[in-house]
Image 1 (cartoon, helix red, strand yellow):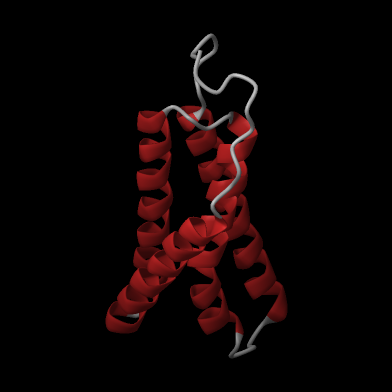
Image 2: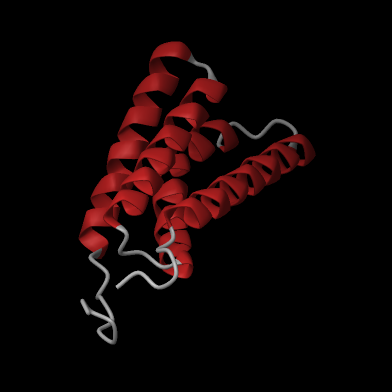
Length: 123
């Protein structure tokens, strides 16, 4: 039967490390190319790899996968957001761009969590 009634505890150190790896990769790409889009793609690839691994392991429910993917994605995007937002030029434009990036992250994590969820009747 597996762990049908046993709730798994979240290993947050693992997800912190994955978030730091994503932030290091995206910061390196941003500093070497000065392209924000490539750094965003690097963070998206980290989230996609994690959702693929979650689907492979079949241990994650939808909300648990969404919580983990949002955490890792937001930690991965934090250095890019700080590099872009610190030189304040036009607040309205930067707020709009940041909102679009967060909306894209949420949609990506939502699709990844739907992909990574454990199938019904899987014990």
